[in-house]
Amino acid sequence: MRYMVGIDLGGTNIVCGLVNEQYELIDKVKKPTETELGEEHVLQKMASMVDELLAQNGIGRSSLIAVGAGCPGFIDPVRGVTIFAANLKWTDVEVSQRLGELVGVPVFIDNDVRMYVYGEAMSGAGRDGKVVLGVTIGTGMSAATVANGELYYGNRFMAGEIGHVAMDGETTPCGCGLTGCVETVVSATGLVRQAKEALEAGCSSILREAYEAGSLTAALVSDAYDQGDELAKSIMQHTGTVLGKALAYAITAYSPDVLVIGGGGSLAGERLFAPVREALKRHVYHGYLEQLEIRQGELIDDGGVIGSAAFARTRWSQLTSTSSQATSTSESVRDCHV
Image (cartoon, rainbow, N blue to C red; front, side):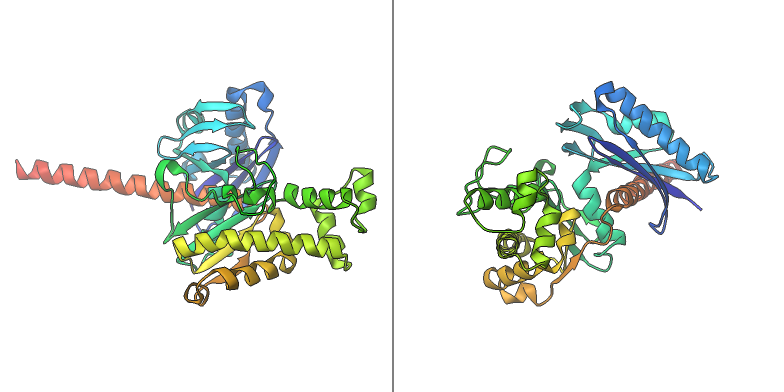
């Protein structure tokens, strides 16, 4: 049996997972990234984690076909370069080449959100979809599209950033430089911000105690919703409506048959999904919605690892297929001149 290793590289932690060709997660290890020690240290750590996974599962190096890594920031997946990753403090780091030299197998990298969505499309909630639009809601919000097993990149690998669509009526400045971006509302930080602003304006809520203690979180907003808190209910309604409006553009542009909402924010479930559906009915032509299924992500914690491994297998297969075709063509040409 052959295996891949998928790596989810974050600014705080690195998670490496051993995955088989059926995209089943066999084992994983997690360690702090330690970005302050420099890029070489991080690359060496990832390589040692690959070795650790193989050793503790009794798998020889010859059974490992490729390694995939989901990295934050702007990524060039063709060259295998991290162009810029703010939370890693990396600029133009040749991850594929340098990590490949350390692990001795081909390494393929891409943006971490795209790898999560790819994992959901290949082995998670979207595995039976032809065109899968995936959204991740966490500290921020982003999206990606997988069509017939292939990621859609757009120009300069920038497709999918619907979290940075500025919405009418939203006035919160975004880190990207725009005002009123979707992710200023649809994110864990967006939920907390909305609650804080309402409480500061004098709204009544059971969230006030947590706010005054400095312990207000998105999860507490969900809990308050379940207890019938009117402020929490209005925040979820508004958040889902903004998300639905944003998704209306993407659904019309890509015409997916499956929409996967993942990331930690998706754990809000119907608290968030119900207003999303309401907004989509108001803003999307029914012909799109009739063939669309909206699903909660299944691979919340492991999507990035499984997606990176699946991506590595796909790219490795394409690479070996191209090499075989080139060899076959070369032999045919040689035979013609014998």
